[in-house]
Length: 317
Image (cartoon, rainbow, N blue to C red):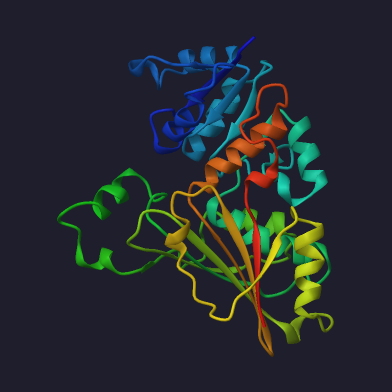
């Protein structure tokens, strides 16, 4: 028997990508709402409540509205917006973080998909805080560089236009007032006492992302070696990683473009550590697929296990 899946917001970038991933599945029935009724709440409610699983690919306000429409039904919801990522009643859809995260996702009827920047940041900081290597009150600063594929249809159109403004040819810094929508989940899920200082830039290439967190070793509670950092948190808390030796720490995030993979990288210098995560913007959809895998085992073998999300820790001393 096929599983009924409805995508609320299926005409947007995220919705279209999910449809693409499911197009060859014969055990999934994709429920399609009529184009002229996409914003009809009565029709939306009918589709949401009659589905087994509903994906919300919507702005925050519309996502909250959809959850209200689902009340009284048995539908299980996976939300791509930021609306529910810090809600304790929702599972945070990052199963690689811990056994507890995986179990909550599997048992929950509500799963919030991590933000792209946030998943990079959390995958670096959560293991360090959890292991006691980084104090929860550490003054974290994060730097991130991204392609434009996640910037929305209007921004994509500008970047790909023949009349692109001159400023779009160079990296553009934004979110300087420290109100980026990913900051609440970055702080809460990582276990930090204070919001990190976050410095994202959007650049003139399609997809691929680097999130970097420098760590001043003099602010850590004790002296740690690079082997301590790599061996304990990144091998025991997150899905096991491989080690590579690098002598030239120069990376281009574009090499990850359109690849369903990511890399963890650790550098060690005398006074500080440098930890990075390079991944593709398509990683958002990996999070969808991994969340689904842990969300309803009976349906999905989209990824047979989390190892499909490749993690590599690169050490440089």
